Length: 393
Image 1 (cartoon, rainbow, N blue to C red):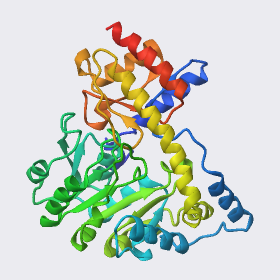
Image 2 (image 1 turned 60 degrees about the vertical axis):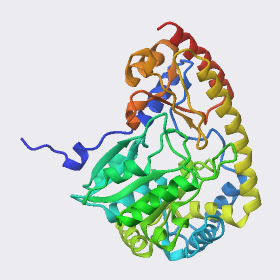
Image 3 (image 1 turned 135 degrees about the vertical axis):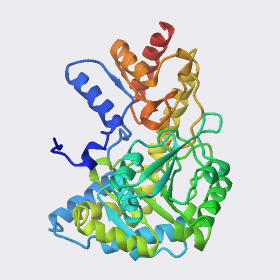
Image 4 (image 1 turned 180 degrees about the vertical axis):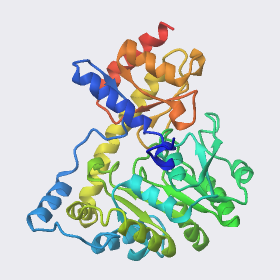
């Protein structure tokens, strides 16, 4: 008997991070005091100057269709940002696509260049959605395991070994979800040179580009050369740096032929991303000092939480946690307890009401992921409960 569902639907897995967050919220709704470390969502409000610009646009009736690729002024402002701030010297407004979220930007990029028979190299640990997006495009994800000892980064030798005649794309995330790792300029350059040599695309997910610590800078691989620029598709957005997760605004900066293809795909799927929301995003570029101040305020809090959580986890016998340099995640190793990451997370939720995402969801079963985009009270209580749980094992 044939299934009522398509192969695409049957072949896709639900988001485990959203599942953990949903379970934590359900327990809270029952009156349970849950410490939730699951969702990658800043617990800040969107800055007022952004919200006010959106409200103004609504009141002025800016609620109609606009070009599928986005508000022209916003696309020009984003292109100028890439030229002036990220070293992508030839970025043009026509290379920019504004879409319904950073996740959809990544999916459109994959869909534009990958298809049946193609392979996409994904370093593990990886964000949970990359493999599913690749499968939805009909392509095959190829995983390359990157260890704690390597700071969860892919080496040039690993990339060379993974490339086959079917390889079409490499996915890079720096800063990384789930590990918080940030590639140095030299590390990125070595990977980019290999991609250019083999004529494969790089999807560079830069959604956490402003969230870096310890003096580290997030470099865009598109900035190295004109050849790199022709092989790199940059995905980003406003969700993480400006606490705009619910606004659903993502961006792409792509080579001109890829940008044109993405624009066509978007025109036949969502039309344009929400019009009045884009006027809010435009204000980020119109008022750069306020935008910088808002980011700095969040970053200061995130940095304090990073150190508190990292030191607390490393003080627990059996847990080892590397020093993340970006994003708002820690990815400690819990393999010494002799259980899978799924079992560890299920038991700590059951016994101590602490919600953590198992590392197997990210391709690393020895680890678990914490988001420190949560309140300080959650971190404090959570550490106490995890320490108690681990001491009982």
